[in-house]
Amino acid sequence: MGAIRLLLAIGLLCAVGGAQAAGKDSKLYDCSRPCPKADFNYKIAVEIKPTVILGSPLYYVSRQITGADEPDDWVLAPTLHAEPGKSFSVKIRNKISRKLSKLLGPPSPNRTDYVREANPTDGPYSAAKPYGFQFVGEQPDAGNDMSIVGNNKAYAINIPHQYDATNIHFHGLTITPHLFEPIGTDEAKADFIKIAPGECYCYSFTLPEDHPDGTFWYHIHHHGSAALQSWSGMAGLFIVKGPTDEVLEEYSKKQMQSSVPFVIWDPHTVPLDKNHSAYTLVATKKAADKYREYIQVGDFLSDQNDADKAYTLVNNALVPNMTAVAGQTIRFRVLCATTEAMCMFRLVDKNGKPHPFYDFASDGITQTEAIKRYQLIQAGGYRDDVLVQITRPGKYKFIQQALSNMQFFGMGG
Ligand SMILES: [Cu+2]
Image (tube, rainbow, N blue to C red; front, top):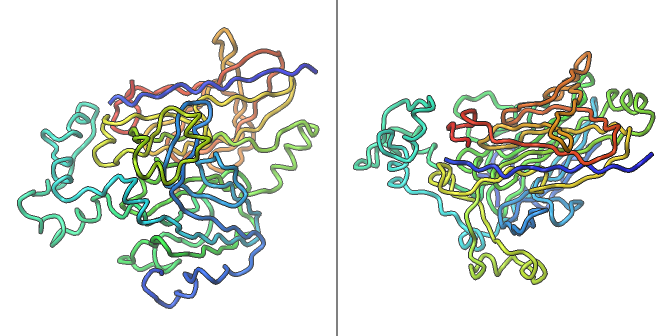
């Protein structure tokens, strides 16, 4: 069986365009205590670190979710696993250095910045109007801070803030609601869980016996910092193992690579000066010698609207390469982990002719039969499990294209 080469060409997407206050659960936030023992136990951290964007000259310094078992050059969070009927726990430690954060930036916008940006008449986002983006509600008043932070708390919470605080949403899992403090609360005025630098949190759940097996994910969800952290790559796969895996293993007669992540994300970046003190604090000599362009995440409020450069990456690569054996069936776990752009998954041969694949699960739910497709379009947060089988040796490309007029704010070129 001849080895063939699969080239994944991912086109550059040009976006034109301590602890929480001690409460009854406070023991869970004590960093010195482990999470309650579960069937699957994970420890992850949040920190500022440099990462090489594979297949590019880019050296990216950003806030990232890290785990002990991850390779150094992995931006996205570690992949977690669990099984139906089993428990899992995730202890997260926020190791972001406030000093480094201040050096790296971006700074949180102040109220004046916000009022300028949110002006629907001539603010930068007014360019989104022709694409059907609706501005609703009352425009904040620059002359009166009270209109933002006093009687109108809605504006205050919508100003991007606390970029170093975080929390986790286990997306799609049938578990206790866990965005608000305390976990499981149904109190309408409850605060978001907030894990600040130096703090820890313990997420601990049991999956129901009848929980679907498939591809799920987890991401940050702290209101005020979620977009910035999402652009930074703070998201990962959460895989629920189960009977579907066994069926597929049997069906493919042991040839399958059981789980190949295909996580699409869209960091928005600005250049980072090589002499910037944040850079000198985190960079290694090896990387400094090898990589030419230094980038950091853009400012959510002002840079989202075309001021920065957006990339479409798969896993952590600009143009990832992989090889496959002719006749082998590969299962890709395709996650659209973007903040802004929609995602496309398309496979073509060297002449540009589309190659079919088989989509057998969406958003973690396995379908009764696989659907033959030539392209897949996903919105942020969507997942699809697809099977690809290449029988003819050669070079193939996966293509991600900018989806004109379909992205958030409709600026796609
Ligand atoms: Cu979510």
